[in-house]
Length: 185
Image 1 (cartoon, rainbow, N blue to C red):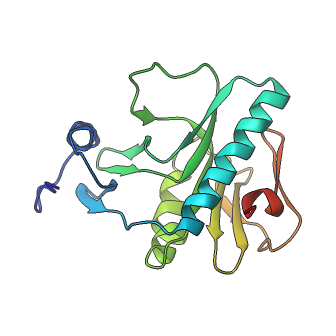
Image 2 (cartoon, helix red, strand yellow; image 1 turned 30 degrees about the horizontal axis):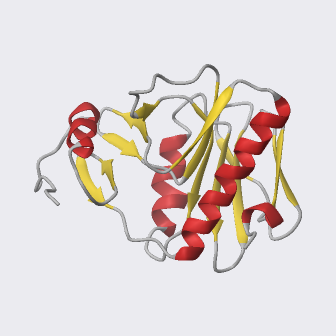
């Protein structure tokens, strides 16, 4: 792994650099490359479950859109790029060579032991700078709860009550995601 040491990058420089890496997962925060932690099986299972539920909804609703698990970059600003665990975007499919998503509607982060304050602080604020983002879900696999942030009429994120049972209403676009779907397996 060849992480540029203390060289601040632009989002465009970062994306080109990240494409050349053979291993690891990274994000760009304030121009600095940050390596992401290895994942547990619970983490990987939950993000796959969410992506699968999003994909099923797209098929059932006949909506135009696509689902991405990790691996796709979300450009937030000139020196900020995040890689969420799952996301749903609406509209025509991106070109096959695209590596950046600019218009996610739902963004999902699954907590890792060291990422809680970042996921509910910095990333929360960053994702809601994108006008397309309507929902941000932060999933805690240990406590089996979901924090649901939704865009209010003023464009600000508002946290809904902590969800530990039942379903999450994600409207728009009109999707309901159950905790049973999220934590299946």
